[in-house]
Image 1 (cartoon, rainbow, N blue to C red):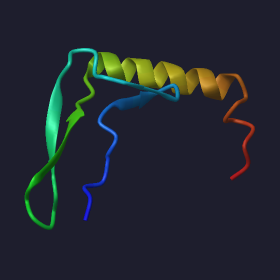
Image 2: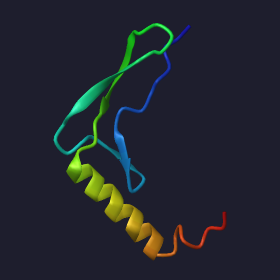
Image 3: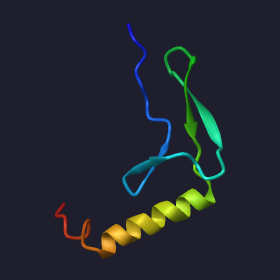
Length: 68
C-alpha cells in the first residue's frame, strides 16, 4: 500500500504557497497516530492575503454571480 500524497501548502487565490513566516505543523493519522505530513500553518499575513483574494474574487463577480 502506498502512502497518499497530501497538499502541504496554503492555497491563496488559487495558488499553493508556503506560510509567510515559514511556520508548519504536523498532521497525524487518526488511525495510527503516525505523522503523515508537515503542512504550512497560516499566520496573520496569510489570513490577510486570503481575505484580500476572496474579497477581490467576490467584487469582480467571479464568485458573487455563482448561484447556490
